[in-house]
Length: 240
Image (cartoon, rainbow, N blue to C red; front, side, top):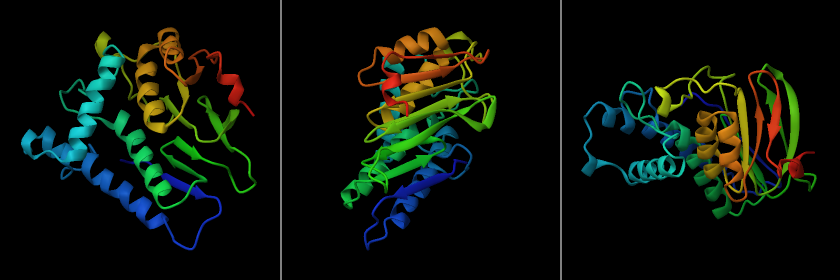
């Protein structure tokens, strides 16, 4: 889906898990990419695949998208303005979470897994410390404006500074949310952080931060269009 995937493992064992992890992401891409005409998602959108023939993964993702829409009050909506479905705002975190579980099932407990800027950490780095994760300045992506230290936590960032305008408020005629440039959300796992970061971004700064604050075990760091910074009460506990 046009996203780089990186994996760093501390204390690599004799078995090589990298091929399995990247093969999993390739499979997800083949199934859910909105850009590939032969993907399961494209066949669904083109009317060439009917509900009885959906894969188990497709059914799970669509159910989770419906759940996220309900929890977010409609701000998370995979139905785009052209009527086609695009669950990318959930699939990325969902896939990273599954890949992290795959690594754990192979006995790897210390790793950092990233796809498209969304990151799941597990355990510690090679030096025995939490993983250090930088939050980019959306007005100058070469600059890191904040570093957080995470262990068994995830961070997802929604913004328009890499992929351009692609997050809209579906309750206001698919307009771009005003006053927000990027939103980073820390959670226990990347699936939760990713889907709710997307929903909160669509809400705009005030409602988005309030939404994240009300969710258990989640914190947020928001950079506004005016370069102002606001964050939830517990965010500073993660700052390096």
